[in-house]
Amino acid sequence: MEGVSAWKDQPVRKPLILRGARQVGKTNIVRSFGKEYKHYIELNLEKEEDVELIKNSKEPTLYEVIENEKQKRKAFTESLLPRLQSSEWRGSFI
Image (cartoon, rainbow, N blue to C red; front, side, top):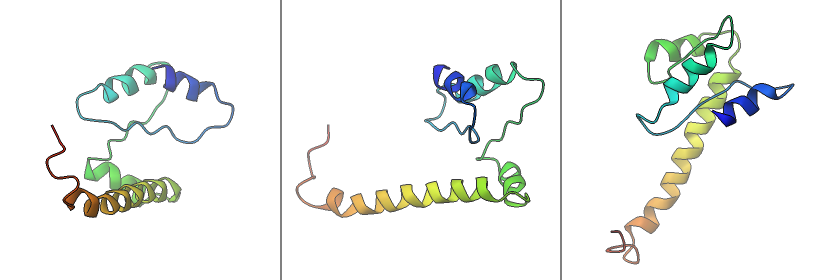
């Protein structure tokens, strides 16, 4: 929750996006943090209806940021595939 509080204390800030593995408490953090405000919006980008809200908004920048991050991760993963498939990596995982 420290990172969320640090974000809150910044005078100029971008939207807060929490990413992470499943079942680690992201939703609990957001809901707990949201209690500090009269109004807050919780979007789950694994839900199609929430994604559509962003896609159809008049402010496309958040959607563009999310799509850009997806493309970066895809490019990074694809750059690793040849090395992971090479013989030097075979058998080196425990």
